[in-house]
Image 1 (cartoon, rainbow, N blue to C red):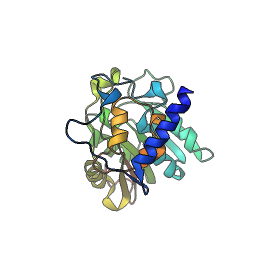
Image 2: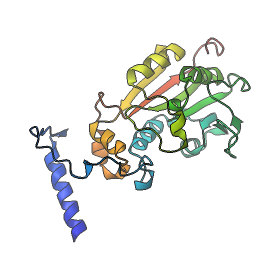
Image 3: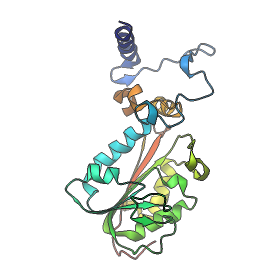
Image 4: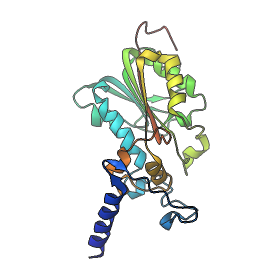
Length: 251
């Protein structure tokens, strides 16, 4: 009975919150904001929400990759594991490679720093999936130049990076250097791939960004709430870059 009451209350609040397909902008007077569970100094999860049903930002990452899944084909390189390669490239993959920064990953087929991979030949990959990695590389521009160099002509980079974010509570926190904006990624990608060969977009809003910072799971806010896009609050910045022209002309 309590669960039913909570569900009915949630639906009532959502109906009040949305008006004509838009989010209702009810702004309380100063001093009248109700913080509820959010008035705290520690998040609900220190694992980005993995322990609460999965991170909110993964909703946007997977939406972006799904939209461009047709580019995941041929020889594909992914960082850390090949989860998205196998999930979204079924029937189109000829070879799947995994890059890891050190030898601690037994599934890795290539070991090295993406910012400096002289032992990997150019023009090898038809697609590179680079999700939530660039913030961990101090020389991030060099890393994207490497991606350009090792992509085959007409090869595609699918990139996602954090916008509004906390940093990792574990080992990766020691090398978490950056977060990004649509403007910074657009300028960076245009300088390497050419402005006419890129697509850059931001995903998120103040509600989804707040939920992510508190460590809430992606199912704890509705898809409709996540789908509301506000360019001033990019939780995720995503970019597609196509290598065109002379394969050795840049990078």
